[in-house]
Length: 112
Image 1 (cartoon, rainbow, N blue to C red):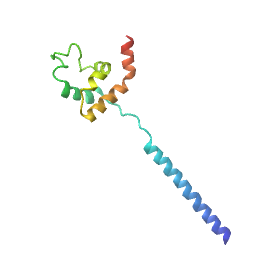
Image 2: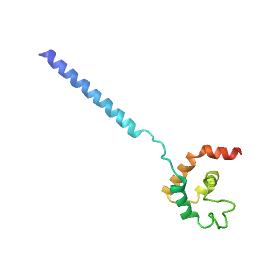
Image 3: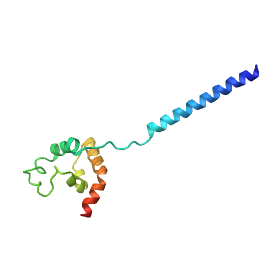
Image 4: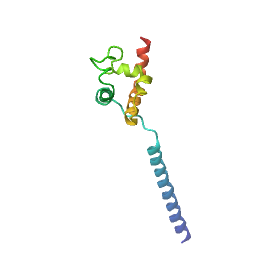
């Protein structure tokens, strides 16, 4: 009888630890840092720029010839100046993510 009881307790013990291992794995997946979602210039960044930077940085505006904000390279190349103008945290985060995703592009622009 004792042997059967020890076997049952042993199985219960193994099941308990196996379940905890699964839970720990799931928790690790939930707390892992996820990559930044892709931010698209035309559909996400450009509307923010049009809302905040028109008419000066768009065709016909007084700053368009020097800094055209309808071109992604301008935002990427002038991130410090462009980002300090935005107060809305959601918009700012989106712009920062777009710039971060395009660091390789920015390096290529500086080389040329």
